[in-house]
Figure (cartoon, helix red, strand yellow):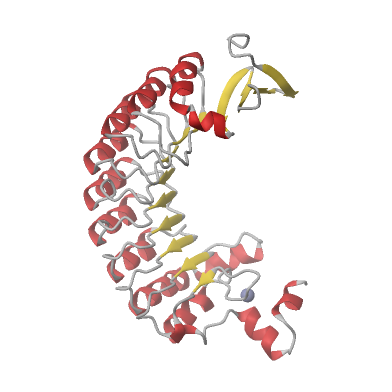
Length: 328
Ligand SMILES: [Zn+2]
């Protein structure tokens, strides 16, 4: 196979083998390639044919990145992957605008071991196909559905909550069909959720955030950009979720294992007031408004300029810049 493709081994390090095929893509594997990453423009422009010819030869492939700038991947390529690469754990199909539900149905049957799937920007997929996929791929831990406007509905989220209880990372950015019903299901069914992006999910209200604050104790990152129905009630529910587990939180701070929210984006949540957001900031030591850390994102909320993390206040008081403070 290697001679057919004119490839050569360009690096052999330990148990890993890296094969560069005219520097067009890289294969990395233990004894046999298990990681396939298409890198340069030539490769990206011939992606569909490359996948059709290569997938049958890499039956032990575990990780495959097919991220595209110019959408060209077709259903037949994904069907080939599903037919041959049953060990696939990690698949990136982002921006594959030409794919249809056929691709998801094929993956459901052929790649049940997926733990990480990125279909962001694949706006053609339907919610029934996504629900079907989750009923087979029950080990999913990371799922990126950003921009999957037709797929990420409440119905699909209910299926995810029911089937994928190990889910830790979920991106629902700009999925405008997502509402409280779906998010509440997630909060109940996915207790290990640690990162959830709901940016641009304009329908969600405080009920979603309250359910997450209650049901997802491991939540570290929450994106609520442009969720303009969110009010102070949601902020207080987050702050109180921390108080409830305060003992555990401070124990973990002592042990250098900081828990609680580490990233919160509430930009353009214009209904929020400073006391509620300050309460969240005070509850979670890892949330910062100071520039170097900036993990509490409040840009666009002009009314929130008085909200500061403790170290920013300290730096201000001592007349030193926050940069000096963080040098210690
Ligand atoms: Zn800070």
